[in-house]
Image 1 (cartoon, rainbow, N blue to C red):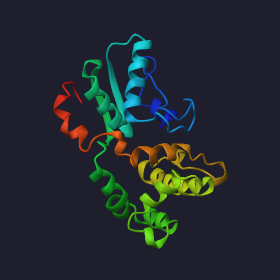
Image 2 (image 1 turned 90 degrees about the vertical axis):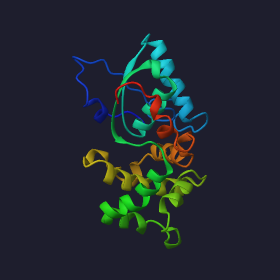
Image 3 (image 1 turned 45 degrees about the vertical axis):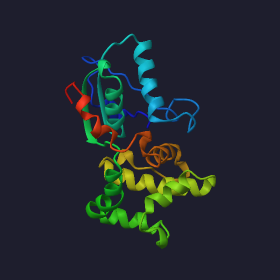
Image 4 (image 1 turned 90 degrees about the horizontal axis):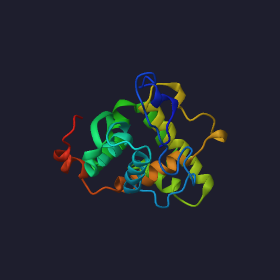
Length: 208
């Protein structure tokens, strides 16, 4: 996902040197919205290239949600480049996490938001509404893609952040690209083998 001003609020620029980057297909990265050559492995390579270009040997990684998963995947691939990891809203990419989040989690803790999401989903797809919307988001029908991207982003932003800044805003001004990138990663198991993070957690020798 792209960086936002909220990510910068964790840092004191007078004391810390922080590097932010928009992952492939998002923010200022080009080509915008592209899913080609856009996998976790490509992002790990991008982080390595950024560190090499800035002549930085080791870093402290920080990430939340998908960013926590990417941080852990990078640290597993390149432990020698990571001094420590700071995580919040931890996601390891396991299918059990996604199933719980998109079913019991939303339904149990945010029933009104979940019902509004179901209202935008055909009854025959209520068993797995996110699978329905992700298929439309990644489909070739631009109008349907935007509708489902807006529905999913409305759900996601309502439960992930309490700050109104993260709400998607008017439909006519809505950019579906971030949701498309998210659907691309989620439907491909984050381009990681099953249980990859947990199976390799023992290799993380740095503080987490």
